[in-house]
Image 1: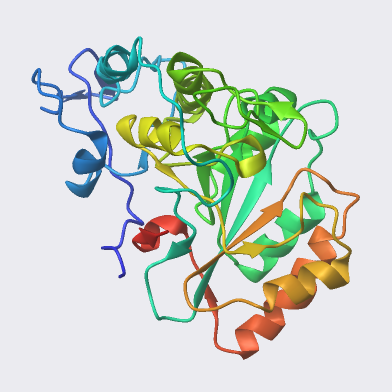
Image 2: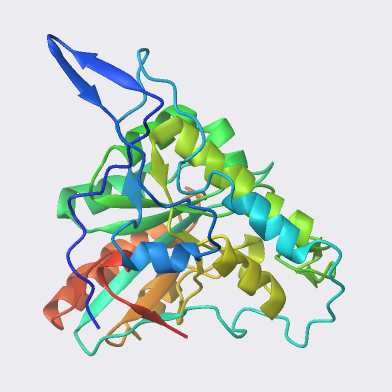
Length: 308
């Protein structure tokens, strides 16, 4: 099911600011989103408050907390405080995680992770340049550690409408309420740590760009179902994939190409943009024209409703 076009990003206004542009004064009004109710941000999103790009931060405007989020994360913390949950699921495809777009149209979303850390803070400029040259949209899931090492590049990418910026966590941890482990990485250990892993990067992205992401992908793409519910409570959707595009940037270019060519209508491909020495860029460059010959178009996640 295709969403209403969202290319003209919504602006969120705050009454705490008064901006003067030349002789014109624009009064920024608070959106009546916080009235003491516990309405979920998912519901707010369907009212049109979705993946917002705020007026760009500039010397005359200092960004504060997103007005949508103000007070809401605290409500989520309060809701989950002291809860002891023994989750029943652990993995990449658990209840609540979205893996496809809900459509029969021949569309494909390329999602590119930027994981950060000692071995994951590179930048695959060849891949990004190809997407720009061919005008191929992509969804960038960016981790706080990668932003720290590549802030100038991140800011440039955030200004390019070909790309949407999404949340790939703060410390690139599996998302768990019980310290689940994936690929040797110990995950978050309780609701409080889940919220921190999501919201610290969410706020970082907002503070640097004015963009409030709509989607979250955990480090390693592992979750338990309780952690996914917390993500939803925070107003985001947890998103994984139905095409393992490069297996953590370990695939050869041929493997990347063959993986992408398994695309079906509504597929979401998981790739990486932080390993320039991998086969990802070449594989994508080989697959894209073949997919276009088959009638596929490339889209953003927020162009369609998502499904598990």
